[in-house]
Image 1 (cartoon, rainbow, N blue to C red):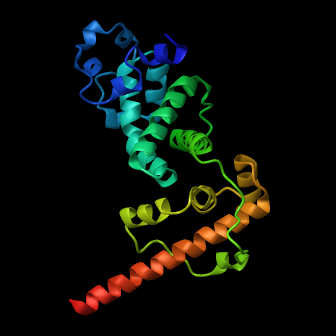
Image 2: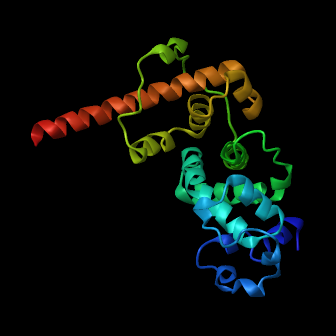
Length: 230
């Protein structure tokens, strides 16, 4: 059994999911739950630090609580980087395995959610390198950097609409757009992370914005046309 499997028990990460065999066992039969943690406190009333301490003490229940607290939000992050829900689920599982493996190294100097989010982004980058290595843009032209200054709001669109538009981007554009526009990395940082030049990162971001702007304009036109017909 690997060290990672041992840290999560024989069932691995999936044993933390609702309805698993591990969840169905009475707590008295699980030696890991003998750790001195507040297992009777409702999960919503436990602080992030209490969850961390419980996980480090070996409590499978605290691992389950931590997973359930952040899985939904982290899945939304993974979906933006993946092309399909299946890929996003793979990223989510890989990310949480890394979280539990490295939880003892969390310095508690930043919010736990921020730390977990960074791990998920890195897991998405690793999957992207495995599945679709980034290449330089070669689609016949440069795209204006001043596009960044144009009005470009996404607040009028629901999550499903935005997710669909972002997932439709070519992988190289999707990665750069997410890292710059949503995660807040600079183009030099993105270049270092993806093994591309700073200029290529800027070009790919501009192209991604142009594509998304075109999709939004078509969506707006469809909405307007639909409202006129009704």
